[in-house]
Length: 111
Length: 115
Image (cartoon, rainbow over all chains, first blue to last red; front, side, top):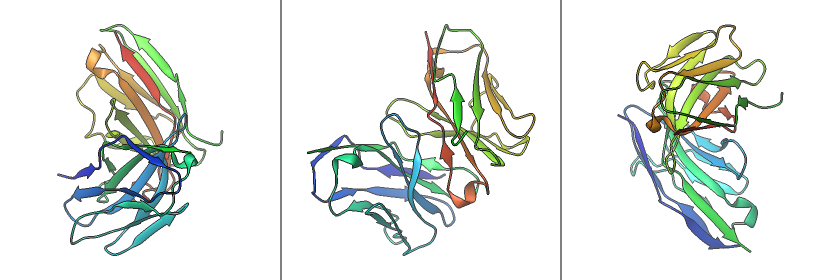
């Protein structure tokens, strides 16, 4: 079956440092990969996605590259801000009309 | 409204009681999904509607859980004979094209606590 494993949190960083949140997956077929973010008091929202190998998704300064050889989709940002504090979820879809989520990584950015 | 609306935002009930959770999707979205999120976990798929019919209910944990979407818009998740293990945040999401695009719009969830 499909599964997503992501870096456990919580993660606490200072503003302007580099962020990496690891995500690896197991899937049958050729999945599409996603990062969702949940800001405090808000619903989950799509941050970025990639639908095939070597694609790079990007949004709001965040990037993730679909690596088929390592079955990974790590989330990166070069300089985090306090406003990036949120819970980040890696997810995949194999077109079976289901999203499979990782367990989430709580990120706190301190000024 | 502008986003997916879920009511109630919080529900506390006693073991054995019946509960209904409501989801009002974004206007015009044909696909609607229910997920369940336990503490410290990611959302787990429960059921997916395309229009009025349940296209995939493989995530419903047992026959105490049931969901309807009679007019292809608002959906109700129904839980009979609640158990303490049902305590979780129940998330609703909607999309226009179906999950293949990955762009689901989530509500803020209904937090259910079963005492």
